Length: 185
Ligand code: ADP
Ligand code: 5GP
Image (cartoon, rainbow, N blue to C red; front, side, top):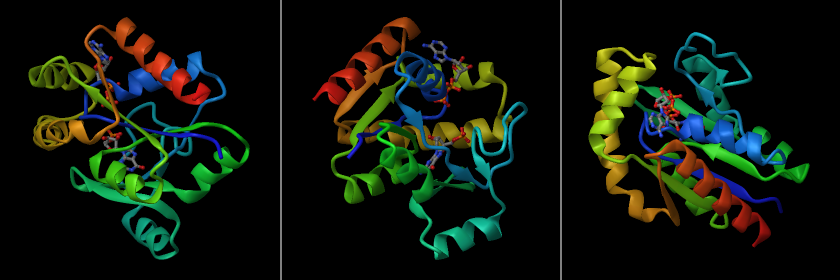
């Protein structure tokens, strides 16, 4: 069975940035494309960044048992589609799930062998700076995300491995080394 890596961390910590670099450095690794009910940001493509579903379609997929895990986050829904994950692992690819805390906990129950990694900010305040700098969320969204971040940071100890994303070069080197070591396992 191919390995599954769960990567969790508060919004703005740099998960997307790190995962993009990780996929470039370890080409066999694939990212499972999640489903969400949130609107696409400029530049995001359906089927590439997310499968963008409306609420009714998301509900239908839940009823069909199409999700490995799903959760509410900041007023929207997010979930890992079983088909996305299984297609990749069946082809022998190790897979990354970039998901929030509730989803990571569900995966821990159903896939205890998945490697769980938490990305930490250098300080809680840096999250605000990064979210404002990213410029994709309005002030209300940023406040909601920072509130959730407190709860997420408090749960960092649940994860088997933690990486601090202060200096990006150091963080990606550490993440890559950990993923390679796990794959060589
Ligand atoms: P997430 O996917 O966790 O929400 P992103 O990858 O979108 O976070 O990063 C949030 C913002 O922080 C982006 O503008 C990104 O360029 C920036 N960023 C990522 N890593 C670092 C870092 N190590 N130092 C400073 N800024 C960073
Ligand atoms: P964003 O809206 O910034 O893309 O994502 C918001 C949060 O949802 C992030 O913490 C991200 O990791 C999480 N997320 C993305 N896809 C999934 C998923 O499939 N399941 C769960 N549980 N969370 C997800």
